[in-house]
Amino acid sequence: MTNPEPRPAEQAISHGPTDVAVEVMPPREVPLGGPRGMRVRRTLPQRHRSLIGAWCFLDHYGPDDVSETGGMRVPPHPHTGLATVSWLFTGEIEHMDSSGAHAMVRPGEFNLMTAGRGISHSEVSTPASDVLHGVQLWLALPEGSRDVEPRFEHYVPDAIRGPGWEGRVFVGSLLGDTSPVTTHTPLVGAEVMLADRAALDVDVDPDHEHGVLLDVGHVSVDGQEVKPGELVYLGPGRRSLRLECHDEARVVLIGGPPFGEEIMMWWNFVGRTHEEIVGFRDEWQAQLHRDGELVTNSTEVVPGRFGVVEGQHLPPLPAPTMPNARLKRRR
Image 1 (tube, one colour):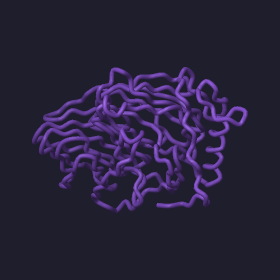
Image 2 (cartoon, rainbow, N blue to C red):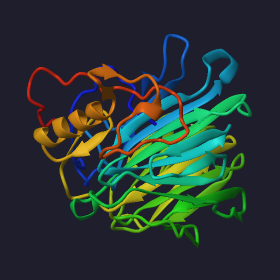
Image 3 (cartoon, rainbow, N blue to C red):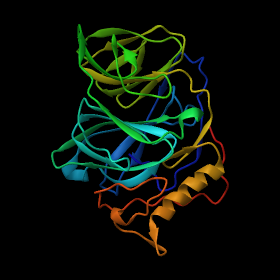
């Protein structure tokens, strides 16, 4: 998924204070399309906390009635220095990217696209989708891995169950299960569903900080009441966290050790300096122009750093205009 903001703010991405025990982070609404288009609820990044481990971006959307909004229709757009994670609760999305990957994103199936030095991709909901509901996350790649070759991985985790709960671990190790998916920093990510009045004590790595996003239901996290759409931050040092359900609920749990690097994020690019971000944008724009004119079909895109999404005929997405001033590092 792209960052759909017409004037995206540049942000210096770094972890916030890690001595915070529990912190509730409310979402902000961002439009993905026109006035009737999909809207997403964004909880990462925020001004005071922009990373949880390497997780640097979290959009939560739906349940979205596709007949009302037209669903997801994100044309080819670029990424650098990050990896994207797609996890659906309901619906189906067609993923196509310039590495040659072509996959359907379905509930309970994990899709990881590592952009590395540069990739472009599209995401379009299929006619099989009446309702779209899920999360989209980005992972920042550390300095030693941010220029890796782009790749795509698909994984279907098995359901694991206990008294009053069911989980699926899509990255890292949790709840006695381990995902085989390749990551460039230690990470954890899982979906957990809880029955009414169920409680679950989750053993976690004390070196990790964690986030718990409540999708639906009524849950407290280590005694902190949470509303749907809110993300709870939990600092490192704990060996377990307690989920108590007061109604049937679903959460997404993410985590990792504090990232330890400051990065710059603007639109769909993660870099380290103003000049690097400007260069990424210029390279993408150069791919989209032929004889000085903006192309209107992906088949006319000139190959370059970000490649070409073969078989996708939606017009590629031009980059927003850069701010008039030099990008500033902001937290």
